Image (cartoon, rainbow, N blue to C red; front, side):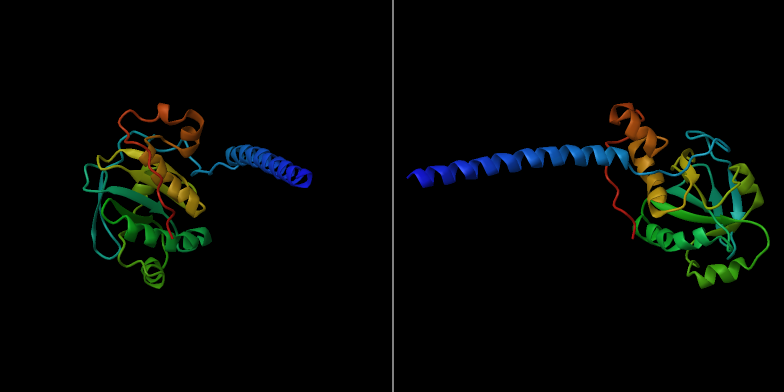
Length: 211
C-alpha cells in the first residue's frame, strides 16, 4: 500500500508539472506570435490615399480588351504593377493567377505596366492571357508608382482599400485581409484591434492563403 500511495503521488506530481509546463509554453507561443506578426504590404504615402477615389481611366488592354479603372464596378479590382524584367514580379505571377481563379466572383486582377518591351511575349510565356494587361503611363503616374512590384486594391465603389509594395505572397494577401478587416494595413489592425476597424466593415474573417 505504501508503494502504491507513493506511485500515485508521483504521478499526480508529474501531471501537475506537465500542466505548469504547458501553461508556460502557451504564454511563450503568444509572445512569439506578437513578435512575428504578419508583415503587410509596404505602404507608401504617394498617390491616392486609402479611402480616396481612384483615377478613372478607360484603357485598351494589350490584347485589345476594354479595361475600366475606377468608378463603380461589379467586383473589387486588384491593380498589380509589374515589368517583364522584374524577377520578384515573376515570382508572384503564379500567386496572382491562383488569386484570380479562387476569388473570381468578387475580385478581378488587372496587370499594369508601361514602356517598351516584349510585353505580349511575356504575357504568353507566363500564361497570363486570361488576365487584363494594360500599358499605361498615365495609370502608373496616377498612383505614383515608383518601385515594383506594387499593388493597389480598389473596392466596388472605386475607392482605394489598400496599397503598397509587395514582395511575397503574404504581403499580397495582406491587402485583401486589410480590406476584409476594414483597415488600411494589417499593422494598424494588429496595433489597434478590431474595435478600431472601419465602421462599415463586416466582422473580420480569416482569408485562406493563396496557393
